[in-house]
Length: 63
Image (tube, rainbow, N blue to C red):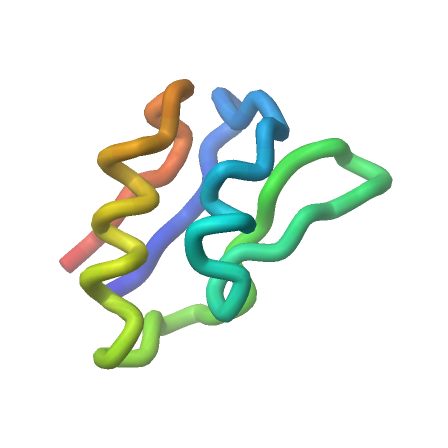
C-alpha cells in the first residue's frame, strides 16, 4: 500500500497526530508528508483511518 499527500492538504496536522509513525509535518511547506514509499503492513489500517478523517481529502491511498 502507498499513501500520498495531495496539494489539497490544509496543514491541520490531524494525520500527524493520529499516526506520527507514518506522517510528518514539513514546517517549510506547511503541510504533511508521508515518511514511507510503501506503508508497513502493521500501519495500513491507521493510515486508512487517517485518509477517511482528513477534512481536506488530501490523503490518497493506492492498494
